[in-house]
Amino acid sequence: MNGMGSVLETQADALRVLLIGGSPQTCDAVFLKHLYADCDLVVAVDRGLDAVLDAGLPCDLFCGDADSVGARGLLAVRRCEEGEPSEVLAVERYDPYKDFTDLSLALRAIDSRWGSVELVCTCLTGGRPDHALAALGCILRWDGPVCLEEQGFSGRLLRAGASWQMTGFQGSTFSFVCLSPVGVVSERGMEWELDHKRVELLSDLGISNIVTDDAEVTCHEGAIAAYLIR
Image (cartoon, rainbow, N blue to C red; front, top):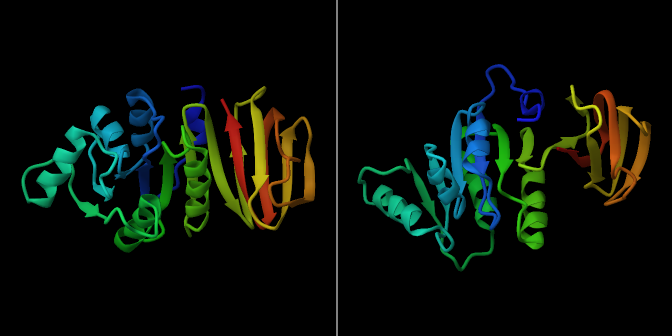
């Protein structure tokens, strides 16, 4: 899958949760199965359950108010709630009249069950720019490592002291966006390299670089979202 294996690296003994969001534009079953192969648990957020079931994946936890999930998913949720055999193993159902998004509450549920695990997040960005930005804000508050995986790109949320190594992606487009008031970033193995460059919030400085060799981006201060475009 275009070198996905070398991007979605695993850490020994780290529990990995595949978090499938409720984006109106979902990922296909083959892609989701590929992501699941490197994960231990699956959490579906509302409409994301439809994608989970279509891919034939297990669902360890459903989180949502069930306002966008399809008929099959809703039936699975109800069966689980009633203690009947279901494709869903556990449910957190929320009141639709709430102050927080389903994703925000799902992150709280993951933390309460498994702690600050590594998240592999998908189906968060398509179809609704407002939801995509809010989702980025939610996962930025997550204490553990975060991978962003969509069919068009791979990404990482990097905080101070974190790096991302990319091997075998020569010619690919790389971008980063600063998510803190100020960030300090270094890049190597790219056409335009940086050395402890000070970058302001949402600056376009890091947009559309080109990978030329084995590459690395490091966030020395602040926080950034880094994207490798496939």
